[in-house]
Length: 106
Image (cartoon, rainbow, N blue to C red; front, side, top):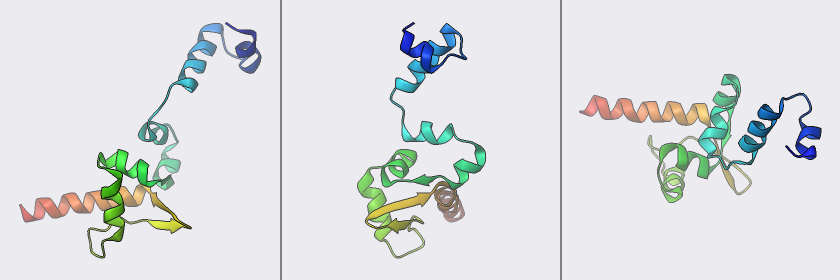
């Protein structure tokens, strides 16, 4: 283990420090970053368009299209300047409503 790692993480054993360095340097998806937060933070987490697209497994253009729709199918979000942001709890509730609408019409 390098001296730099030991200096930055002196409270961890060598094995734990190496695992921590690997975990910090590995690329992670937005969904993984969000799921690592506490439960209160997760509900209030602000998502970007790319985060929502990754969460729903749709193209970013699809998310933008749903922000322009003036109907019940519109994804709940708001603008911060030129950027769209979405609360994870709102997106989850919207998704539940979409799912309930599909089940009701089937």
